[in-house]
Amino acid sequence: MTNEELKLKIEELLPGAAFEEGTEWLTLNMDAEGFKPFAQQLRNNEALNFDYLFCLTAVDWKTHFSVVYHLTSTAIRHTLVVKVKADKNDPAIETVCDIWRTAEFHEREAYDLMGISFTGHPDLRRLFLEDDHVGFPLRKDYEDPINMIKL
Amino acid sequence: MLEELGTNDQGDMIINVGPQHPSTHGVLHLVITLHGETVKKVEPHLGYIHRSIEKMSESLSYRQFSYVTSRMDYLSSHINNHACALAVEKGLQLEIPGRAQYIRVILDELTRIASHQLWWGALAMDLGAFTPFFYSFREREMINEVMEETCGARLTMNYIVPGGVMFDLHPDFQKKVKLFLAEFKSKIHEYNELVTGNVIFQNRTKGVGYISKENAISYGMTGPSGRGSGFKCDVRKLHPYELYDQLKFEEITEEGGDAFARYMVRIREMEQSMNIIEQLIDNIPEGDIQAKTKAVLKLPKGDFYSRVETARGELGVYIISEGGTTPYRIKYRSPGFSNLSALNDMAVGGKLGDLMATMGTLDLVIPDIDR
Image 1 (cartoon, one colour):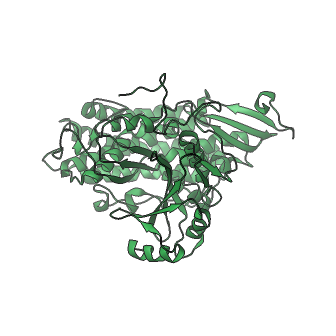
Image 2 (tube, chains in turn purple, orange; image 1 turned 60 degrees about the vertical axis):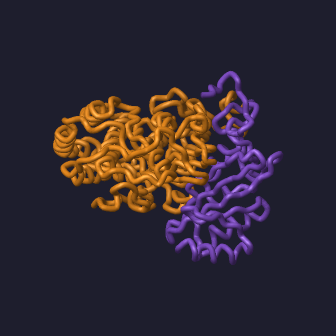
Image 3 (cartoon, one colour; image 1 turned 135 degrees about the vertical axis):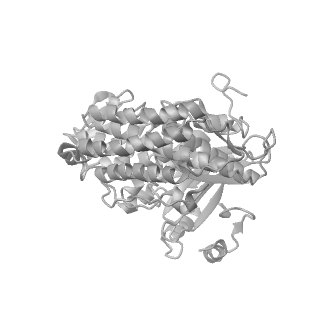
């Protein structure tokens, strides 16, 4: 499906969806509210059939966080990027690891390094760092005078 | 707490494999819940070699950041550098010279062969056969020599840079690559005679560590591990970069979904990689090895995502640029990380001894997982 066709299809599901201009793949910005049912539709709608989550990551924009989902359909071969906005003080987004199982590890990574809490995640613990580590290293305001070498 | 006691309340034994275990190939720590010898749960504990490469890259320039990625999947360091270069080139909209493209693809495929060779020897060793290791290192050494002459390194190459490659090829490059191809072609039947056809090896890998195609996609398993379950995920075919759309090669898939199927994919892939190199080695065009770039690279504001096929699967480099000389945020979607997440699913219900075959055929490289 081309980006234009995909855009029309997404607009049916999510009226007034905010798309980014000039991107390689169709990119959609949305709020955390209503993301989970939308994600389920992306996976289960036969015309969309996004079955492969190939990247999940979080970005600290200082004023807010965004969690970026790169999705593709292995059968129809179209790709969609969904950027979900999360609150600065209490970033929380519903988990998608029951939809795409790869999200279980990716969400733990995003929690560990960026401090996004994924509600409903079965085992949300730190993945790389020690359980008693303080702070989230990938945040822009993170300071670690001992271990971090500024170049 | 339970780990210290050694058992849980259902009488299952909990054991630690690693982080210093010979078959985990690096510092992977698995906490395994066992009922008798049957695996009930496998929980990877990561982070022993976590260096926060993503954070480090945020303070490195677009010329510098690819050097740290050689330390992620150190067996595919060329391909990691390649992915970084492609992402930067996408941002700068650079066209790279034909000669550089040829060199990149040949080196990528040599890397893939070397990586699969090491995996083959190490897998056999995990399963108790020591000799194959020497066989595979015999041929791998020839590739390392080629790399050493051209790139000046044997493991962390740092040869592919944004815009092309760093130096021109060594004068002996073509001769030595052809020598390697001839040598390896005459030796690859030994690999099959020694291991593939071996009845003990087949008994230990057939039907072991099964994962269905649907689950493989859901876990994001890519590379030979995903293709062993019939998931067509070769980035070289789906999203061709450099010369891959002009080359004739086959995307290897197997339908078995077990350890043996993943094994066969890698063995057959080595032949395809040799096939690719043969198509290119005599036709390397003359010309520049680098496109003209400014001394300081500046990417426009936006998102740039490049995908390449490493020896282990799909590597994604996701650069978010705010228009400066360093990335605002960078994410490496590493293939090993997603492949490892499927390990629990594959191992549950199997025996502890089979776990080594399952893990071995996933071809995990721990620095690639931890980053």
